[in-house]
Each structure stands twice: as structure tokens, then as C-alpha cells.
Amino acid sequence: MTATLAIACADLFGHARGVRYDTIILGAGAAGLMCAAHCGGRILLVDHARKAGEKIRISGGGRCNFTNTGCEASNFLSDNPHFAKSALARYTPWDFVSLVSEHGIAWHEKTLGQLFCDESAKQIVAMLTGLVAQAGAELRLRTSVISVDDTSDGFRVTLETDGGRQTLNTRALVVATGGKSIPKMGASGFAYDLAQQFDMPVTPLRPALVPFTFPEGRFAPLAGVALPSGITAPRGPRFDEALLFTHRGLSGPAVLQASSYWREGEAVEIDLMPGTDALGALKDARASAGRRGLARVLATLLPARLADAVAADLALGGNLADMSDAVLTQVAERLHHWHVTPGGTEGYRTAEVTLGGIATDALSSQTMEAKAHPGLYFIGECVDVTGWLGGYNFQWAWASAMAAARALAS
Image (cartoon, rainbow, N blue to C red; front, side, top):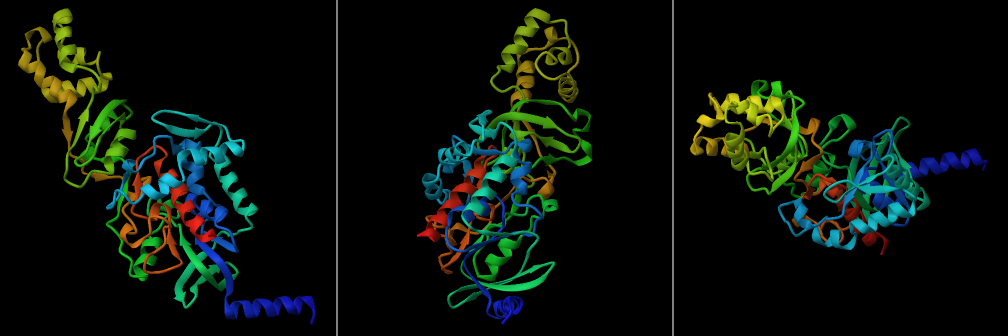
């Protein structure tokens, strides 16, 4: 038999029987790459994108906020707040920092424990794809998943590329396809659909870490104004970070953080002067510059356009000297406890992550394996574990991937 004929026969019988892998991983993002690099055996990593790790590449302004030194389970939202503890404890931020440092990637801490690459997020992608290649895993891009079926000894996966369809068999299947955020990058609800195919519950989904919108361009005149703030949404903690006014509403780190806790119809509370005694500052101004109007005084405490807007909203005329303590208290309350009700959010189009996902009750917190379907794993963003802004979601990707990889390698 000639070599060409032998290859043709192998292809024919391979398609008929289905090529066998130890593990097929769906999704070549942060979690999928990390898992493929560490789970061992004959591995196939599949993604429909043109390049692996595209969300890593664009993250952190192109420098990838790859973890947070203060990462704990309390920094995550989930129906089960304890679920993430096991994976996070067994693969810590310092474990990933060690990996990054071993590969000569320089990094720095910005604020609030956020770690970034000194140079480029592409370094993290290159590190992970290099580790995947070093592990001998096969990476197929521009490849779509047509179907997944369970078999007596694993799973049958049908894939499609420009070259046609192929059916593959695998002992284990890892789903790392992410959530629905940023659909222009190919995000979809694939993981949730697959979970439901296997009768696994999915908690309600919604965009998270996303800007607020307001009707009728309420804040358009303030677009571009930024300042420190403290923002609190119902059920959530207070976030003391930057606030940015946009043509469509409110953005900035504090807003993105609060959005994960917000629900339609609810108001959020904004402190425009965090860490400052607004009433004391107003009384001091009354004593030293009482002939000034409120807008002029507020302009010494806030960005000028915002000061004008607050003064106009309060509709208080006259000089500061003519304002009583009660009136100044009213102004201070407005500055520290401003309540606004967003009309909505920017949605999945700009959301950094998807809140909700595969119900944790259906998964092992030790291995990320489906309790009712041995060999089926869900890791990363598609699971009902959603982190705060600031490197927490990447750390969950690394930790959940390592939990699954260690189980698969044992």
C-alpha cells in the first residue's frame, strides 16, 4: 500500500470511527489555554476565533490585568458564595505571578492589588500558547462545534472547519467558551445551551461590569467629566473608585463595579466627595468667601461643569453667606448621597463579563466536573462565579482551569 493510500485510508476510518482524544477543550480563551497547558494526555483545544486568547489581548488597555493580590471568594458573585473558595485557595494569585515571572514577563501593581504587564497583554497570550504547544496539545482555530453527544465511554464531538466536518471521540470534555459579553468578539451562549442539553441548571444571566445608561441624554452635557467617587448599589458593597460621565450615562470603575449588584428600576447612591467633609468645607467657604454663589464655591470642590450642574439642580440662588446651616446640610447631603436611577446598561455589547451561568450546585468545587455527567467539566466565565473588576475574573479563569486540569491529569 502506498503512503498516500495509507493516509487516505486512515482519514476514512478516522472519520468513520471518530478520532480519540483524552480531553477535548472547547474555547481557547484564558481558562481553556490554562487547562490545555496543564491537564496532560492527548489534548485537543478548539475555538471558532482566528486567534487564541483574544480577550486576554484586549484586556487592561492592552496590558492585561492578569490577577489581583487581594483575591478572595468575597470578591465574587454567585448563588453559592462558598463555591469558588476551593479552586482559589489551591491556585492563588502568587502562583500565576510565579508563572509570569518564570517566563520573563515584567509586571507592576497599579492600584487596589491590580497586577498588569509592563509591556503587553500579548506576552500573556504568547506564554499560554507556548505552554500549550510545550504540553503537546493540538490547537485548532476557526473551528466550530456542530454537536456534542455523550457515549458509553465519554463524548462524541462533531467539528466543522473550511475543510469540512469531522467527528471525534474523547474521554473528557472541558467547556471553556466563556459568557455572552462582547459578542463582536464571537461571544455566545454556547456553554449555557450545552449545559441545558445535559439537563444542568443555569442561573439567570445578565451583563455585568457594564456602564449605566440614562434616558434622554441626561448627562450628555457632562460627558468627559471624571472624578473620584463612592458608589453603592442595593445588596452590594460601596466601591470607592473613579466615576466618568458619558454621552449615554455613567461609566468608570466605580460604576462598572456597582453594575454587577444593580437591578432594573433600582437607584444607586453616589458620593461625589468621598473622604471629604462636604458640610465642613461649605461652612468654611461661607466664613471665608461668603459673598460667592454656590456654583463658584462648588467649583473649588468638584469639576466646574459638574459644580454648575449640581448648583442648577439644587436651584439655590444668592450668596453662601445667606445660606443657613440647614441649607448647607441639604447641599452636603446631595454631594454625599446623590441617588440616581439608571434606565439600563450598555448590555453585553460592552459588558466585561456575564453574571450568572452554570449552576454551581451541579459542579464539584474541587474539580469543576459535572456531578451527574462524569468527564464533563465547565470552567471560567461560563460558571456562576463572577468577579469584581480588577483582575479577579482572570484569577478565576486560572484557578478553575487548574482545578479541572489537576483532576484530568490524576
